[in-house]
Amino acid sequence: MFIDYTEIELMAGRGGKGSVHFRREKYIPKGGPDGGDGGRGGHIIFKADANLHTLQDVRYRRKYKADDGNDGGGSRKTGKNGKDIIVLVPVGTVVRNKKENTFIADLIENGETIIMRKGGMGGKGNIRFKTSTNQAPRIAQSGLPGETGHFIIELKVLADVGLVGLPNAGKSTLLSRISSARPKIADYPFTTLNPNLGIVKYGDYNSFVMADIPGLIEGASKGKGLGHQFLKHIERNKVLLYLIDCTDETPYQTFKTLENEILQFNADLDVKPKLICRTKADLESELSEEWGKFEQEILVISSISGEGLNRLIATLVKMI
View 1 (tube, rainbow, N blue to C red):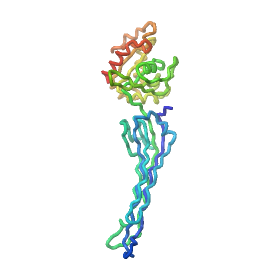
View 2 (view 1 turned 60 degrees about the horizontal axis):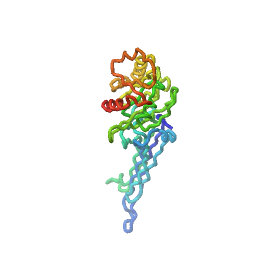
View 3 (view 1 turned 60 degrees about the vertical axis):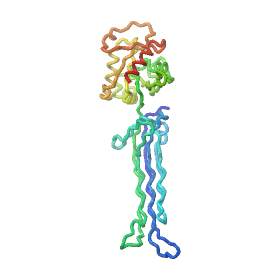
């Protein structure tokens, strides 16, 4: 199951108590203080893992509590630190503080880590309180509590090319034809409800990642048709590939609608390179006069017959 949003609670471990202890050795019946410090509480750490593609595991756990640090002991022994919890998340995970809705982290590199909540420091043992006027202190510190908090966790798909189009524009068919991805394909709108990633290979050893983003509709930037859930995945893509059905009677208007929804969601996406394709070229259909309104070159492709696919891949490679 593809999960790209969840909320979780994190509780780092409390620090261990410092020890009140005195040396008791043969021939030294009244030794000085030797109580050790408490151990640090366990941290909670997020680590990006390229093998994960969903927040499913994080969503079903919801609450994480790290171990407390152990108490200090005699002979200046420091307590053992609490065990850290490492939470694996997909590459592309964004973390925000729920209460303040502030940005915390954006994990975009495989293996990247961040300490989300720090464990509390261990308390000082009584040896730390020995002074010239107090040779036998009988005090020690308690450990500090670990940090806690509630967080919003979101996944934004990372891809080189993002497919943009109305529902049933042929995005899933194209992805299945030029990559090893096998998204669900059917002749009705909203077949794709979650992003699909495919590896497109070219040359001998080269490849790029293409994402099939669920179809957008007018009003998507305002949340219509799950628009916000879909649009956020477009933010990560290096190139936007617009697919417009050759049977569309108003293709230019369709393009402007798609572009408008994207820019209303995030105006910064205007700087991303874009390419427009007329899909389903295998169908015998009279083309709308609106195709003449486009100022840029339109690539013509058919995912069924294979027409134009090699040229499309070559063009995308240059753009990437």
